[in-house]
Image 1: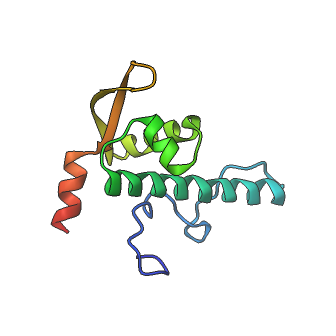
Image 2: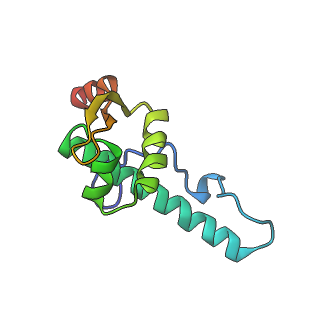
Image 3: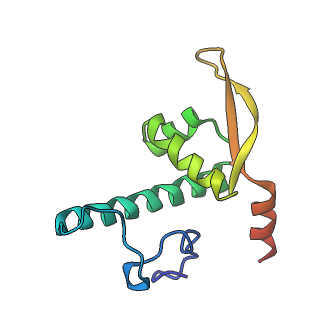
Length: 120
């Protein structure tokens, strides 16, 4: 649980500096270190927002997720890849894009992760 009493789904992947981990940065540069830590925090927050969207909205294409979050699709894709590597999200199928007629991949909660989440 975090300070707000919410489940921190990303705690294992984001270790605070107090545990010996440091964000990559140029040695001897306090500015670089602060920037790296700020980026790490932003990426974790974006992953949490995307995961929450899949939880609340169900399966979505990258375009749909980007539109709902107000992000660029190029921001959604790497965050989704992170969630896939963590086995929280998976490809669930395809759906035709109504504007282009092109088949787009649809992603949502992985069945294993969702089942484990419900069991807790």
